[in-house]
Image (tube, helix red, strand yellow):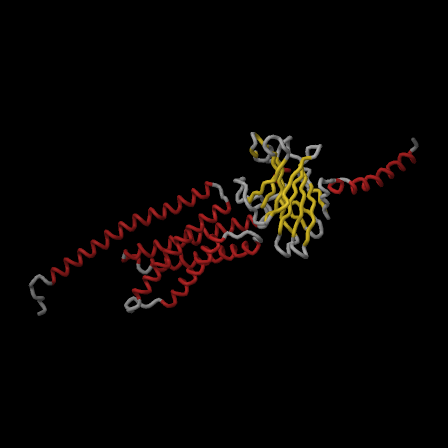
Length: 390
């Protein structure tokens, strides 16, 4: 063949290749039961694809088909949407699993709260028309219809494949392809991107947790310890007061930052609400703000209303500390943090609690000793002898 012939043949192949690609990939996939979708996208990892029809104007209904090959015959495949982040935690997942007895595939739904699957459960997106099928080439298709929030245009999608052993799901591999199987999907334009990582929201959640743990969970208890125990020592007056105020004001300032981060995360969490955690957080913030304003209304020591102010100040302060610590553990459960972080915080709180117990004993011994000395002085002054000045 001449050089000119080779050149013309190369041009012909170059012209034909794009046409073949345009008709291949997800566009060439066909489904049973006359399922047809308005758009599709070849996903960048695990050789998967997603098809969808989105009714944005009427009911925000998303009909979807996800196609992927499990790592071995009889394995599982999964696709889901994460309303809050780009990672696994929080994903509302459709998982295709082999039926018992080798009778094809079925779809189970999982509300993934951490980084491991628990029992199947109801999704935060109402899901209907669930089905699954396996093709001759071993690729599994997952079908479903999800009711999204009105106005949804772009979603965080997560997809995964893994093996099945003895009828149970086995965790997926941790290859770079598996760990990068997540990204954004624009339901209107069809643009799909891969995040390949945990997403910025996870950093915001961690920041939210750290700020609140340091403020409500450490600084405020330390401030309470300074106020209750150091003022017993006359040499610590008025240093104990300034230490107490400093801890509480810094703790409140850091806590407000953590609370604001939580409100921001709540606004980003379409479809997911941790009601108890949120309500406790709002209560702690409100009581903390009330304590700050109460400082400007503090009566003088000899004022007749000072005793009532003290009772209010102490009861509200201890309530804030207790609720703050409870909510920190609630947040740790939501984030599914590693056990070492929970253990570290428990140890820290236990140390503060141990110090408080020791100081409580020391304080009572000092108070009782002072009362005993005062009683002796009083008895000595009234034992029947008249004062010399008289």
